[in-house]
Image (tube, rainbow, N blue to C red; front, side):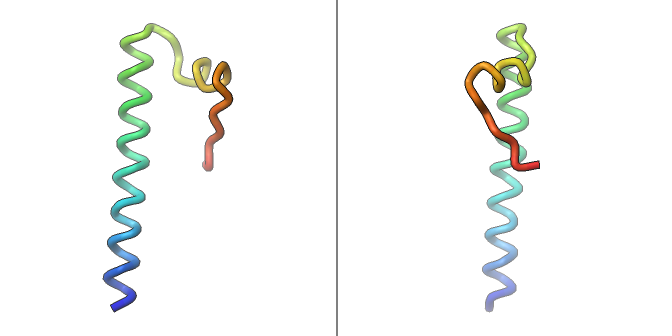
Length: 48
């Protein structure tokens, strides 16, 4: 039972990471500003 729950949580976390990465890449390409520069401006923190 807990194995299924753990897989579901892992799956949702992976979707969140992929969505955040793709959205950051697309937004930076649209703005013409590097994603790292934008994160430094607004104070983003990475968990990696």
